[in-house]
Image (tube, rainbow, N blue to C red):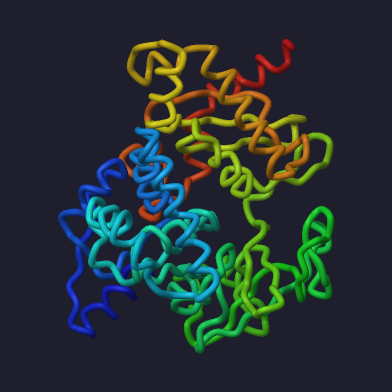
Length: 390
């Protein structure tokens, strides 16, 4: 639906549209061919662009030092004045970077469908001269967007305020400890906020219901017309909405702890060794397990550092790689202040990416959990068997 809305707006304004090839590894080549003025994408592809540029910058010491200085200098200016270019660093570094990845003509980058890491969004605003990098939030049931950041904002880590056609309310979720009266967020309550709870939407952009499915419609839209999204958000003091958790897809472990797998997958994905990840747990088990597709570039760097050779399938079979992936998941988990029960205790490494072809992800790159559970049933059972023997 979001794609259709974007295409309608594009064609109404006399624009043309191009589509990427479907291979996330070729996204930079697609950008070079299309040279878009507006790049609308999802975090997974934007992460690929970010990683491609950073990997290129790290290859030589001089390049790494120069690029680091450029990022720091322009980042400081961008945060101070909002929008604009940097006459020196754009000419020396960033104009070349933008041309190399096909974004030299780009004026705006819009991200949706899943949370985009704040450091990636800030990087995009710095690395591509003159662009506005913004993030939005919505669902198919809300006809795409429900919130959107302002053009040329310097904010990152939130999804902006409501669009004009949409009301937003936060409903308390006491079981998860979120109340609409809360004034602070975080383990240490260090983030000021003006309420926490499940995000509910209402307005002309919200759908009437699911086709011939009255039961599901009543579960999703309440008597007052509010669409219950299943996402947990907080209102920031500046009026922006920040997504912090997920009510749907929650599962309970054997000790009674509730786990939000999507939140954990986003955190595990910060590891340079993790390309894609599926976190699993259930009420009969005391711990989590995960299926990890190693990041292609991270895997190559790991193999080079270890002096190992072989294709992805051969490397994924190595106990040493499995141990290092687990260790790095533990590291990023601690950095993100996860609880002990939120750290996976075993991983299965799969060289084959989650894709639309194997049915594991949707067209917007969201994991199909029920399909993944069936697909990896044997591997999940094997991981729990190995944990039981320890």
